[in-house]
Image 1 (cartoon, rainbow, N blue to C red):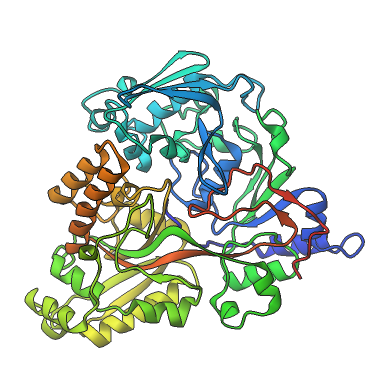
Image 2: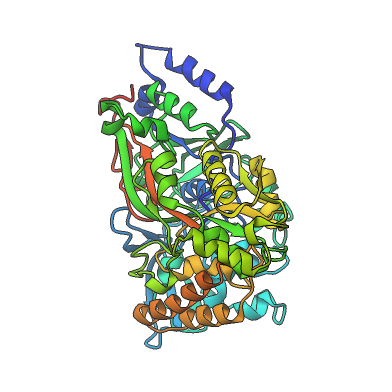
Length: 547
């Protein structure tokens, strides 16, 4: 899942929070909210949308995981798959047929019973080419999904059916050992068909149904408020099937553009959880920062993508020269300072038990980069066109881009223009291929290498670089069809080697999940997916303060 960074945070929101915090007994906003069991979360960016079939960002997923629930969930400590909307399931001996039994207590927020048909409807909608869902490729393991996406079959042919109101059958194209893990992704959430029909969104991207006054959801919370540049607020859903496991009365998600603003908000007692930590704060961490700091490796990678439809980036030698001429460690040491690891390959270590082979690793070498550029006809940077490096507004992206800009100028003699876009404009530019080089990042939806590799498959809606390579596609397709995780990983290694040989992307660093968590927050567990199902999370106003 794209881990896009911060957008704009309303100064008015902080001012309002400060006013609230000044009322009554000298409590901070966070302490007052803790008494009311309202969690205050910094959440990177305004959500692009709240349609489960159409979101791609981590910030959006956090909100949707509070509003909706899929067939299964994952344990927040171990990531072990647990029952959710489905109370049980059976898998056929050949691994092709999954039969799910829905929890009889599962309800929509309007009181209607959750039915197996709600899943079948949502999945067929997501895979429909008319919708243009970027995550439609995740359905590729389900029977007929590929033909539906190619226009050869209708969405009704998808291998999912409601046997009755409480029984859902799913037929796969091939055995998929990690299929259950895939189902925690938002694109597999159910949808309330009458609501989407009412607002004309059955086969369209119309978002009226996602407004607070219109949305019907099945998760632990319901949408209370969505104010652009301000906050998204959710309140406890009393009809949720496992309401007793939800200790919070609500959550407020705040989009914050400036990491230093977020840091000040946390220290002033206006947030319980931040999205990130300022590198400056890490450099001179005081006792308060260390007490609240969480720093855990996660399955995430920060990288640049190339628009391979534009010259000279359609030449793998140019792309590789750009990649191997960069000193990744110096970027981490000078700008990030949070224990991140240089990304010499694309897939984070141990994701689904996978370790990138040595053959896939970038071998940094300015001398080799100069030779590759010369072989491509641009010796010493002569006649090399001025390219544009696009990134979204963030004080973290800018210094990284500036450092790489200087490295390319010093090491290769080429000029690159930095181009900063607002969050919506950045998303639009990526999706429409309106860039030369663009900042990107990916945070695993489920622990498997294919979840990363999928972004460069020629038929993937997430392939914004327009990279197309039959050798890579073939290796990835073979990995998808492998019957065991060991075989899948071995085949994924072939795909990653090919991807890195052709420098389809420029990996920069592997993420650590760095954020501040108030001592008032209990049972906020860390895991490599940064996945939270909200069960058991609670607030204790006496558990510490954020000052």
